[in-house]
Image (tube, helix red, strand yellow):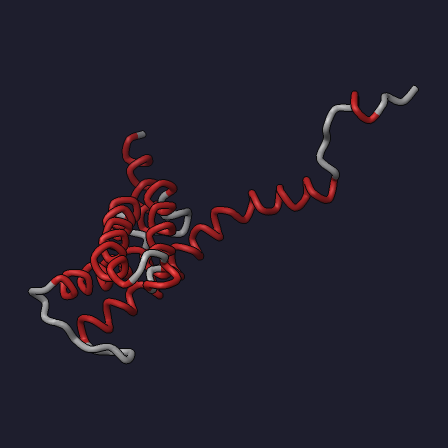
Length: 152
């Protein structure tokens, strides 16, 4: 005799289980893609500030924008390689929060009004990377694997 619908245990339908399993399997690869893509996009801001490339204007190194340019260029490169990902991402997240407060918030209350959507999106991505790390295809993973081998 079949149980009434209210008493049947909940089970995920087979197609949904397949999608979830595939998403779990792809997560480390997508984490790596997110890290590399974000690093490549972010370092472009550093290239603008440091060298005046890509439609930017070079700024003095001894200024807030100069420090931001150094962080963006070096931090972006380190993210692309996946070296020191957690601390670099934490510093860059703080930089993006500071950019929002210093440069964008005075222009209006909402990010859509003051142009802070991009730095806030970067801050969220960097917070994720600071918490989760670089992923499997990274210098951090290579270093960690070598350390594990030498300890044995």
